Length: 102
Image 1 (cartoon, rainbow, N blue to C red):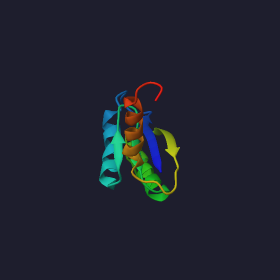
Image 2 (cartoon, rainbow, N blue to C red):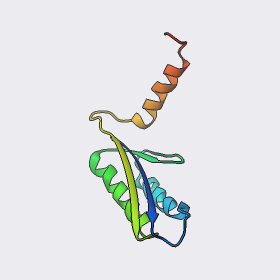
Image 3 (tube, helix red, strand yellow):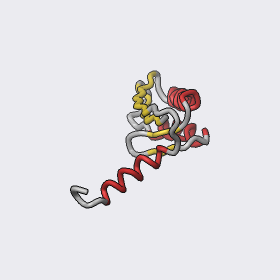
């Protein structure tokens, strides 16, 4: 499965969330699961239990930066598939390279 998530503190002493987000991304990267971070979300690939354990740990890490935590999740649950973190993008790029109408 792929899970894209965004986690941020609220109710903290600062409007800046980069330190909290860095703590969450550090948890993800240390997990060893395939992942990708962009300006809005971090996406992780793995099975249900391991992905959600990482999301929980990342959320807990952000919790240290405020009195509340906001978590947004989107999941693509497709049993039997792996490598989709990059394969979906590869298929998109291949489709974009095709001439119109092909």
